[in-house]
Length: 305
Image (cartoon, rainbow, N blue to C red; front, side):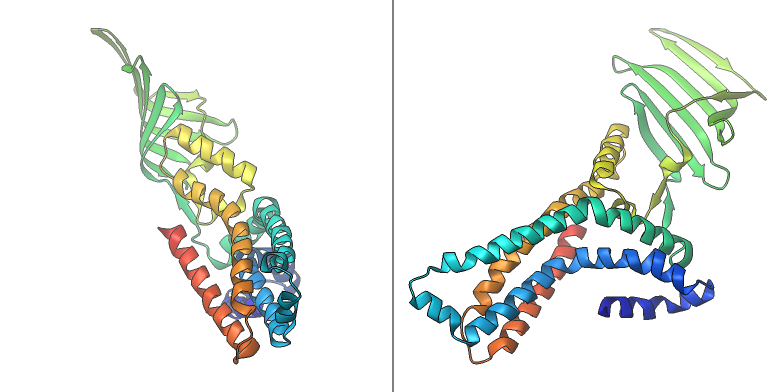
């Protein structure tokens, strides 16, 4: 609720400027904001919950009584670990399958009404493979008319260049799904001979295994994919030879590492709060908040690095 209030007051001007209805804001944005913020803060919630409960037990001398009765500390930890594993499993399912679907709706809403510059285009000097033996290059791509300038396709056999297709302009025809070339030339290379074909003022429609949408990236695109879609996207990016796959790999690993931190923070929380101290619950909670904040900060720094 606190996160929703803070987020609302940050964005209320945007909501008013676009004349958005209450139902649209709640139904499309905040309903999908809640799973996202929960996925981000669940490890911290688990830490604070463990500290609060265990500190109360320690204050009432209940943990000391259990240990005095001959119960080992490992046995005391067992229910904490079981609960942490259950929460970790739920968060893992959410991170991989539920939260990405809600994040897609939330991020599309943000792109349309709040942060309209969230789209980024691979617009200049783009190289990528469309097959193991074919590489494509264009100097500039425009989303306005879905056209590529200074287009070049190279084909290799046995690591030798055998074919080059060049065109000043390559335009996507949305009605047919084909690409149209203007003023193109083809160069066939065989051993010591070359055959050059030049076509001026000629248009040619052809099919290529890429689409204008392939060159558009959302700033939070990786958050909008389920794990299956993310793995497929990473494989396609690596196949094309593009260098954008690394940050998507980090997101894939983060979806597994975040749930595991619940188990780690649970053990830390028990260790901090199981001792009876003069400061009581307040001291334990303060220590937990500091540790939780340090965890979040270090986690974000690690992802960035």
